[in-house]
Image (tube, rainbow, N blue to C red; front, side):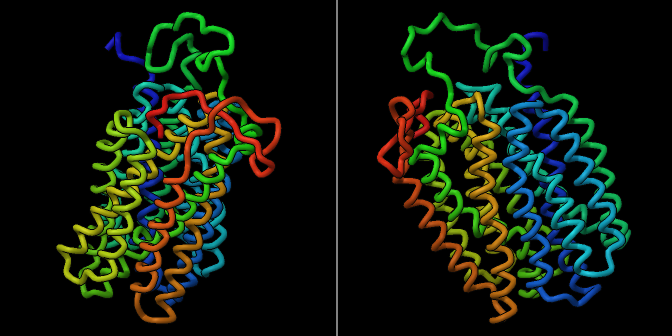
Length: 426
């Protein structure tokens, strides 16, 4: 154990944080059905709670990334743990829809905003050669939490009621996240180490690619590459929460039991674990862009599957395929940005793109609820989601790492700018 690179401890801590936070997040589908039964709210109205939550935590990913660059991940994640855990516990006492919007949509969203960006950008800083593998292991925590926690939560709801289950969930989130945050460290250089545990390289020749620093956020936003990546991830993330929020009521509408419906969410988690673990390492060999493009195509196929499935077996198979695709995409999001723009301000740049692209996911969930209330079916929403996945694929295929040094003019006036890491990220 003495020879184990400290970066793997960072990966383990980030794994636990994402397991707990994302597992709790995707239990919303379980609570969704319980809240509908208790209060009789419309699916559009209740979907709006999660939409506001998704919007809040994605937008807050940007300041969370900036704070991680400046203060390190420990303080940022610990602060978020207090917001997220407290909000979930207080959700046990809601009696009106507006309370859910405030507690879950805003307070829990602020807490969740300190999970994805700080964890993933910290891992990006600790690894270069094995960045895909490390990112895959880290992100698989979110998928494993999605696999394990929804059926456990359904059992808790059955035994304790939804209020007792919310109280227990919030307490667990608070304790686990506070403990795991203490193990996080900003980067290897702060402890006298190098990424991947490698020895210090020989001094780079002045002006060489190796000698170039990573881009600042201000420089990155002047490149065409950042905006094309942002558009591609926006298109793929608009529909990404639809199955994760609506799959339980969708399965219930098909006549399946509450526990069987909860297992559909777990099936997405199982697929995502495979996608994150396998495709993170694969991307180190065949390239980040190629791997993400394949996943976007699979996501389109999965949404077409949701539009036609009825029986439980095909539903689970489609959920696994969807999980595999979205798990791959979300795993490699921070990694490809690190490849394109460097490690130095990874938190700020990833947070910025996550704010722009991830916040689009809020509208998909709300839209799917509105479509159901208007038509009595989720099929139109699933078909539109497949189309958006194909649009995302097309946008990604037009994107290349910027080359050369930072231009004096922004890209919309003819300028362009530069990466400095492996061309495998193509």
